[in-house]
Figure 1 (tube, rainbow, N blue to C red):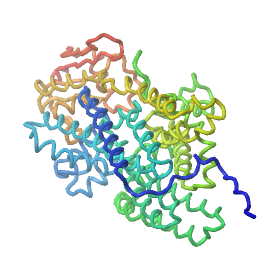
Figure 2: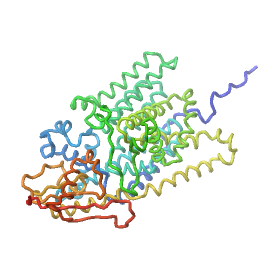
Figure 3: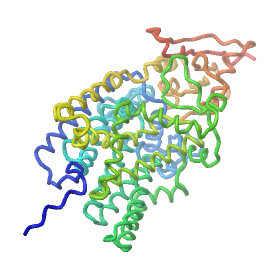
Figure 4: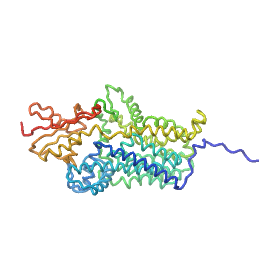
Length: 547
């Protein structure tokens, strides 16, 4: 007499997909993802008015690494190690070195004739470096989703993340996020494979990628910490054993130390970034209030407006996460959480994503609580993980939705229609030009290039115009002792309290407000469409020879 078949512990759709070798279908999927990435980022590159202000610092660092002796920094540099320690602005070397490599190609194709053209070429290089990272990201994104949820969901999740407005625009800008996410994704992929194979080697590889992510952004160590916690949690598996958990933890530590250790040794600590010191000192920093009508890309704590910090932090996280996920995917990601937790019993590798998301959420909450500031960029790693969960809620839990809504609403065509609607809803916001409201700084920079000399003082709190003029291409120079003119760049309506994030703001404001030695308005730029999205940007010129 045969015994009846044992019931499944979980619905069939929750079982981990079978491990398969790379197939032609995978090749087609990766080619499709590459086309999506190139199309989105090429469009944004062609519709960029200027890059983010942070990109100027990365361009300066790249040139400082190329020629340390010409670096314009407070501490004289003669070697690359000097730049690692004292380069300005302080930042890990990973992304600036990638920018330097890309810039060598850009400058070989179109050699710049002067420092002004060099500045423009370097900012293009920061963008192209990020776009290259976004293209590389499709490989670990698809592979990670394929390992956990199968090729269909892997493709859908990777494609969705490429077109999310915040993701697409940040990874098209001169910022670190693209390469940071590349190494995070490869690290998570290695960790998932290691857990599924019950091995140790993948933990070492994940540690290596955690170290590489750290060399791009200090919080890259979250990858290593994630895998360290996964190693500890493996003790809950009775068949794992303490010895294997210890070996896994040591493997992660060794992999991280091999990559991150030398940099930590050179700088004598974990990070040079000021944000870490601000958080450690519990100093509340209030960024400048945005212009009227401007899009708010960050949440800022105001005690008079927001009351208790404990109330503001979850509100700020919810607001920034909703915008970063572009609304609907966040809801689906939250719906998928119970299914992901249930799947831990059949595929513990899902825990790698959940632990990473939890740690990143904790870091975001700490940042918001300590610094009083939270931007969409801080929540982007959560959106990366969340895209896999959101797609799993749409595609991988079909039996559950069928039990509620019935067959027609959960058929494959209906599921793909829902996904397509969400995918298409991202495109209008994604396609908007980058930094159109800051184009005036570039116009002022070209004017300064033609009219200012090395004997003039340029007071540019934003550094865009000064950089485009070629003056600060390798760092911000000191003021000449006997200047001819003082040039001051100001955005109309700039608040005085913004001086902590713009060191020369007070000096520029003093020039504009000087009633004794009155400056002239040399040039001003306003939004040509008069949409109210941009402030007027004014260039003042003051005769420095007058008392």
